[in-house]
Image 1: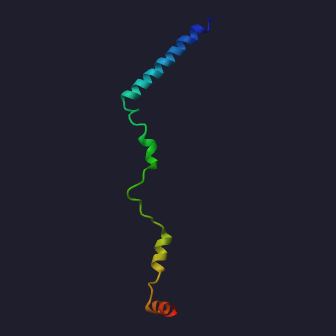
Image 2: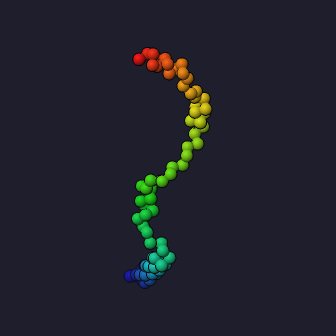
Image 3: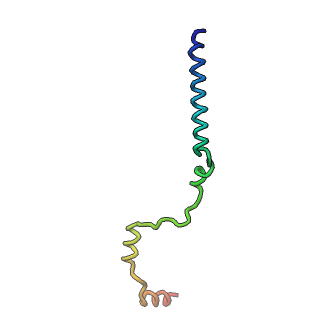
Length: 78
């Protein structure tokens, strides 16, 4: 029974601290918008970042444009 004299005031103290922290959080805007941060990952970006892949740049530089010989070979084979 003597434990109750320690535990009950300690529990009330903890409850008062947590209620005070909750009131502080509400007053300082911590609970304003709970849905948007969770749904932000589902939204598409308007303009994706450009790729800086060195392989695609190198292959684009090394690719040769089609020549007239290749075009005439394709039409002749049809």
